[in-house]
Image (cartoon, rainbow, N blue to C red):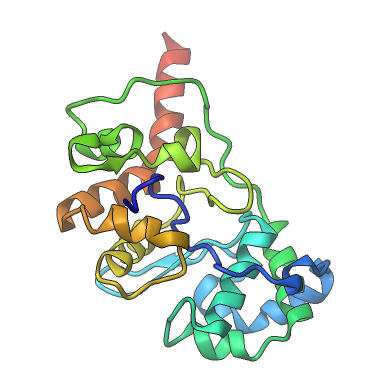
Length: 223
C-alpha cells in the first residue's frame, strides 16, 4: 500500500539527494543568480497566483535544502515543468546551492499557533487537511507537514501561506501521474483519492490559513 503519509512533500521530494545538495550556498552570490527567477517568483520571492492561469510558488523562507532538491529534480527530470526545466538546466551545482540559500533567508514563513485545534467537521477542507478520510485511506496533511501545515525539516515543506493555485496544480499533477518526484509514490497515492472539489478545498484551506488564524487570535484576544 502506497499511502503512508499525508499531503507530504507537496512541492516534491527528490529521490536521490546526491552529494551536490551538501554544497554550502552563499546568499550574496545567490541574489545574482536569482535575477532569472524574478519574472515568475517576484523580487521578494513571494511568487504569484494568477486566476485562470499558472501559479508560481512562494520561495522566500522555504528550507534551502528543499529548494535545491527541487532544482536538481527539474534538471534530472524527476520534476517536469516546461518553464522551470530550461532555467534549472542553466545552473550548476554551486549556483543551485547559492540561489537556494538566497531564497531561504529572504523572509520567514508565517509562524502559526501550533497548539492542537479540533478540526471543524462542517469545514471539509479543514477536516481533510487535519484529519483526512481514513475510510478512503486519505491521511491528514498535517501528519507529515506538522501542526498548521508549517512544515517539518527540509523534506516536508510548509503549506500554510503557499498559493492555492500552486497547491492545487501540484495535487492534480500527482493525481494524473504528471509528477513523480515523491518517494514510493506517496503523494500519488494520496492525490488519486481526491476529487477536484476536495483538492480545491485543501488548497484554499492552506493558502488562507495564516490570515484566518490571525483573525481568530485577534477575536479571542479582544474578548
